[in-house]
Structure formats: C-alpha cells, structure tokens
Image 1 (cartoon, rainbow, N blue to C red):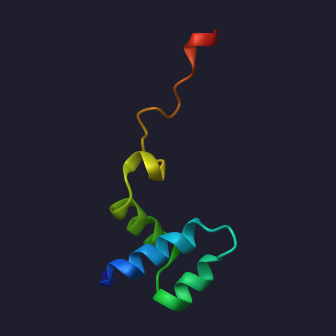
Image 2 (image 1 turned 45 degrees about the horizontal axis):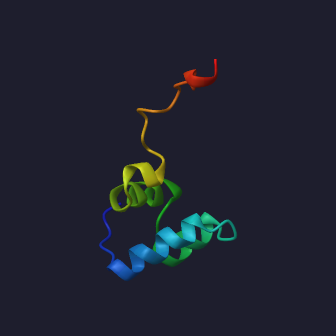
Length: 66
C-alpha cells in the first residue's frame, strides 16, 4: 500500500471496512486497496486494542472461575 490518502478518505475507508454491508470489492473499486491493504491501513490508524491486535491477552483462559 503506497498510496497517500487524505484523512477524510482514511476515515471513510475504515468506516466502510467496519460496515457489514460494504464488500471489500467496493473498497477496491473506489480506492484501489486490497483487503490486506485495508487491514494494514486500519492497523496504522486505529489503536491496537480497538482493532483487536492486542495479542497479549489472546489465548489466556479466565482463571477466576476455575
């Protein structure tokens, strides 16, 4: 992903990606980005815990109710 986007475009791309009704093909047609490009863009512009990248807590079991 080497394209430069305005902040408004980045916000719109992220919004479209979060919407269930928007297919990634639409994002590709409008902005020329693949699904992996959109994921990379979201990782750059969203907080880690918001995007779900926080791998520190993944795989841990809740031990309080054992």
